[in-house]
Image (cartoon, rainbow, N blue to C red; front, side):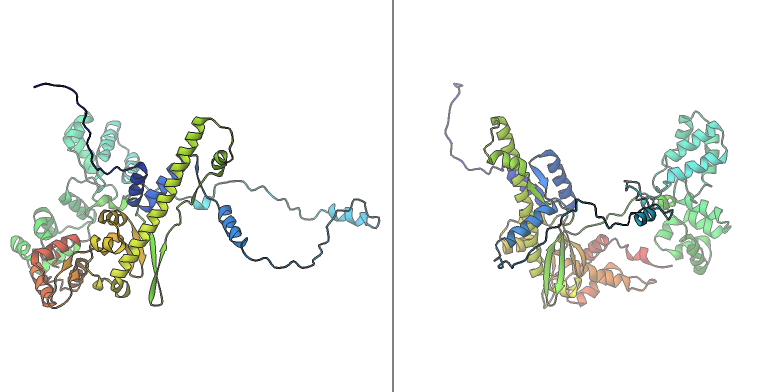
Length: 480
């Protein structure tokens, strides 16, 4: 077999994604905050791109007025205001001097400086570690005991539980286990109650002790029957402890007020606020879609660099190529952002057309909808619709929803139109909220009730939707 180099001519077709196309696709799937951050980065990196100020908006309005017919001028004579150069002879200088040399109240205009506004300051939120370290320093430990205490506090998780073995802490501090256990028992008396425990049973027992409750039934339930308590099996607890169910219920009422996560009060997690991308307002019998552009910079190409090329100034070839590249990049970004906003508007307009009953009447009237329906309606690809509806939120008369929320699978109905899965989930949620606490509805019972409402749904589907709604099964929802 002879080896060698050969040249072959092959005709083929392939899809090549230009950098501009990649940028446009990337912009579609960005959330509103990510888009604002990306625009700010582009402004910093591209000198040909800048944020348009209010003067440009006013210039546009003035340019629109230039096309309007001008009314004929009226004969208006404006008297020129001049400053007298000569000193008037009739001025009463004595009264003038006496008035301005008086010892009355003196007003001094102070200079406005950028000083901090103390009303805008807020205190820093104290963490669980800071709170425990403060109590540790006040207790009066020895140097070694304080070292062990710092080590214990440093090994607590966000819920206030000790995540490390006490033997490891004692070894790390070159101490014996007895001293480490002593320091741990003292730290377990600190605020918040139940902190520094090693498990749920220990933290509940610590809280019961600090509350001064000396009840053997409560202690026995916490030590040996937490699993039965979790499963709401009061009969099994009563049989094991040889007490009545009423006594079990009385003990459980006290246990349920204990805190299973002592460190929860010192959580530093801040709530995430969602700013909608679209507003849908109702005007009479119709709806109006408004894009939310607040917080997004209005972009334009820098006039200085634009004039530097168009005015025919003598600049080097490399400089000219650099400016052309940056202005072309800026122009593509502006067009891509405009196309993104237009695409989101079209998708929301199509959703409004398909889900009109939802906007009028509520979640019970949400219809089954898939990406293909919207794609065919606005003549775009399904992947484009998927990118547009990701991390985009719309404020509607029914509440704030992600655009993905309007796409649901269908549940068949006997003798009628199919129902959206989100509407079925809402029905399950309402049934569970209105159930008897002492006799909660099982998944089988909920499936039967929905089937009586002409919905073809299986028990496993009910169980799946219940888990999505973060609702416990019936045996754990039962009230003792």
